[in-house]
Image (cartoon, rainbow, N blue to C red; front, side):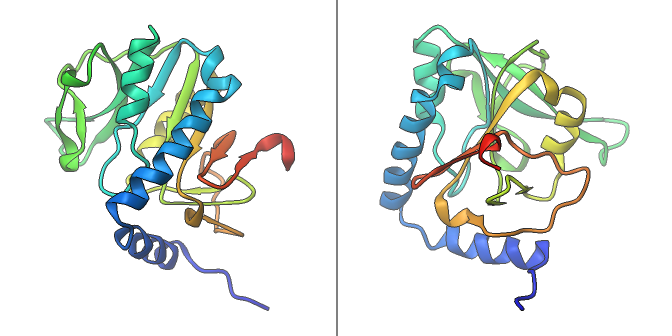
Length: 197
C-alpha cells in the first residue's frame, strides 16, 4: 500500500519539477495547452474570460490574453487587494483590461492590472492556475487560498478550467472540503472533465 503524500511534500515535488523545466519546454507545452483551450467549446462560447497572468514556470497566458482581446472578448485579470488597515487581510478580485499594457508588477512580483476598479462578471470562463491536481479534479494551489475564497463566493457563475503541464497531475492528492475543484483540466497530454468521473 502506498502512503499518500501530504500537501507540503507535493508542493516540494512539483516545485522542483517546475524549476527543472527549460524555457523551450515551457513554451512548447504552453502552445499545445493554449491551442486546446482556445479550441474548447467553453472558450469559444464565452465572451468573458477571467484569466491569471503567468509567473515563473506556469503555463504561459500572455498569448491567450492578447488573442482574447483581439477577438473582442472581455478579459479580466486577478488583482490582490490588501486592506491598508490590516495588511494580513488580502483577497483577490478581477479587473477588466483592454491591453496587456494595462498590467504592472504587483503582489509577489506577479503582473496585475494597474486599476483597482474591479468587477464581478455575471458569467464566463475562468482559467485558473494551480501547483498540483489529480485525476478527480482536486487542486492544490500555492498556499494563499485566493482562488478558493473567491470561488466560494462567485464560483457558480463561471465554468472553471485549470491549465497545467501534465506532470502536475497526480493520481491522488489530499483534498479538503473547502477546496474548489475546476470543471476541466487541460494539459499538454490530455483533457480531464467532470463528466468523465
